[in-house]
Amino acid sequence: MSKRKIVGWTVFAGVASLLFLQVPRIIARGYIEYGSFNLSVRRYQEAEKSFLRARSIKDESCASCGLGMTYAALGRYDDAEKSFKHAVLLDEKDVCAYKALGRMYYDRRRYPEAIIVFKRLAEFSPSFNTYMYLANSHVYAREYQASVDVYKKAITLAPKDAVAHLQLGIAYDYLDRREEALAEYKEAARLEPDNVRVHQALALAYVDLHNQPAAHAEYEILRKLDPAGVTESFEDFEFAALRETGKEKLYLIPLNNFSTKSLRRLVAYYKENYRIDVITTAPLRLRLAAVDKRRQQLVAEDVIDYMKLNYPSQTLDPNAIMIGVTDEDMYIRKRNWQYAFSYRSQGRFAVVSSARMNPLNFGEPADNDLLENRMRKMILKNIGVLYFQYPTNHDPRSVLYENVESVNDLDKMSEDF
Image (cartoon, rainbow, N blue to C red; front, side):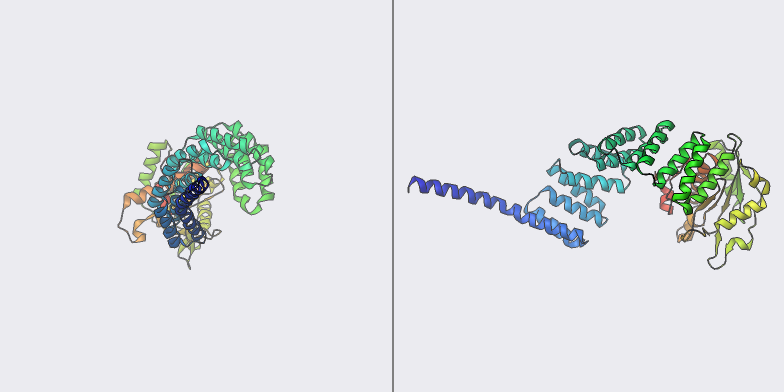
């Protein structure tokens, strides 16, 4: 055989070997693409089969990442976590796997783990979104200074993003750095003049800084931007402006047959833990007009009107905070909700219902300790907002958590501002 033929066959053999080695990768890639398609159209069982088949042919990070996304979509979070971790073991710089794992931790409120993942991702693939998720995770983990540092990094990448400036302002607020918070809110308002959330933050910031004219100006802006939603907030501000710091009086008003023993325990708890001398009244018998006969529920707005009617001197006193407590079911007329745990009005009035907190009403065994714990938290949230004038927040572990929609949310909340 000539030298030319020998060289030719050698080259052919080399190319053939390379092609042979690439065949599994090509086939696996086909299954990954098919799995990704099935995942996008929510055919999760088919997606799982495709990604598993891809892994059996060629164990690459993309297949494990896709499998993790599929398991997360199915609610199989433990399996998803294992798949994402396997992906980053195969490729320690797999951006897709890190993003998906971090988002899963974030959405599952596992903020300490989300912080670890987003920090690692930011090391080799920094981006605005990664910094925002990392900073938000620090806020939810109550690591406010760390969140400030990361929000600033996000802003260097997107200096004209109003939400980033707003979030940085909120982090400053948590650190009681009011002037710095105000500066960020102003910048956010400059970038997005019609952003309602920004102007709400500005109004509250001016209230905290006792700049009443500026606060009024912000509420006038809100009246134009969101006339339906700002009315109650404006009333809250008007009443708060008349209050004298240090002269607040807190009244708990038992409605109908609310337990006297439970009321005493609540009073003792707030006295011992928050040094509030709660004033209690005799039970207030609600009139039939406060009850929706069709729904067999109390109407929150009517209950507060009736409380104000029966306690005129407290109603006229801007330092008096009145919270009605009831064990009867309740709803808010102006909300499209089936029920409500509580309702606040005009910055000084609230009513709290324990009906949907009671395990007995869900066919579960009686648990008075659990019931009182839930009721104590919801009343404490209202005390925080009305008596201490704290803002609500988005931290599911805080008693000031804004979006309390179920007893599960209540049970996750702490009794800590």
